[in-house]
Length: 305
Image 1: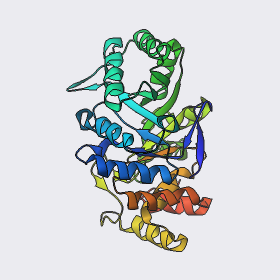
Image 2: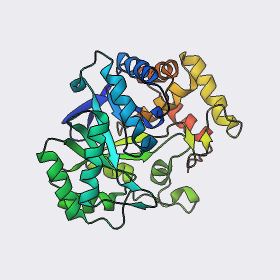
Image 3: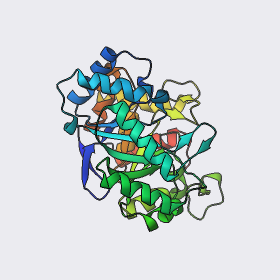
């Protein structure tokens, strides 16, 4: 498994992260097998959130980890906060309470990374800065980031932060490419030219903010998986052909497509099947050519100008 420098390089982690949203409902033994398999594959980065399984995902992860001979310090644990039933909450009180809850469920003294989960339009950046400083000074969080935020939102927040944003978690897959489309269709009048995210891809590269790609196999907003989906016949035909040529699965190729981008994007995969995870991780050994990358992009229905 290849690694990448996260943010300005203070932290290094596996280029594929295990998303832990779906751990809730699985037994301790099942989760232990998954963690053990992931770790053996070279995955040291584990993505959580306080709302995943209403906290159960963090709890079962901690219980499973305790059964394994893997030192906590060998893992990078990331969690998120800010989503509450019916609203978003970036208040100092909620951020600190949420982290305290995650630490208790994860049975650890600290998390390596805390992300603010989606934007809160009522955010007061000074208050967020106070929360981050408190958590950092207490040794409870080492690094900070956001998810689904545009450049101006990050710039506003960073104006007040002593501990700057080093990660932005964004939806990206072969079929969800708005952050790429606008950059390819500059000065055009077609739909792909609409800038929906403020050039977030280029902004993150300019400011050493690592993009984490979530839902790398999904199309739309959790509408379903595009792999082996009859709604995407041309895309799957191309993926299946290339996967066969390279001796990997179509899921590995879908992740390799993201990893090929020079922005050095970390991909979060949420499978709970360790055999499928092993197949996906072969993406780390694939380097698509420029021609192959664009062929996949076009097969998803994107038209180059």
